Length: 210
Image 1 (spheres, rainbow, N blue to C red):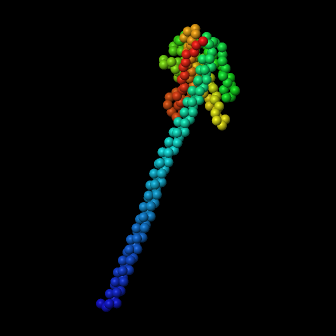
Image 2 (tube, rainbow, N blue to C red):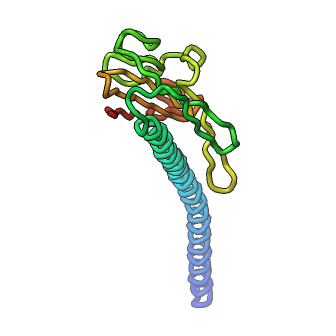
């Protein structure tokens, strides 16, 4: 075999090796492109799951903030009613009035009764029913509470927003010179048990005298 023929064979082998190398590089690049696409899909899936968790946290935070605001306002409304009644003599029976954000005037009856002898059942005096623990019983429907011992008070909020609060109270005569006043409030329409809309009612109680 001549030298020229040998050089031709060597050149052909080198060319085949070069082509094979280029082929493997092309396959590797195609494989890398597929891997990048899969990694991108996995990253997007993980990001979507993470964003979903963040959304849940945001919704929970907003709900908790709203409940805290309602708790604060409920306590303020109940405290206002409690102060109005406590400011009167223990034997006072005159109706008081309280005006809400809409201009509606609500009557507040301060007439008390001995425990178990009034309109509130075994544990209360006059007004909303009480539980054995001496707090307002929220299982009682609003319509069955004696007149002037409950109100749907509308509170003013920021930006013209209004919120209606269910306020109930009970007056227990202890002696001729003292009485116990129990007031409770919560957002109107809130459920009695758990749930996103559940708000723990504000429960206030004090002993007022002459």
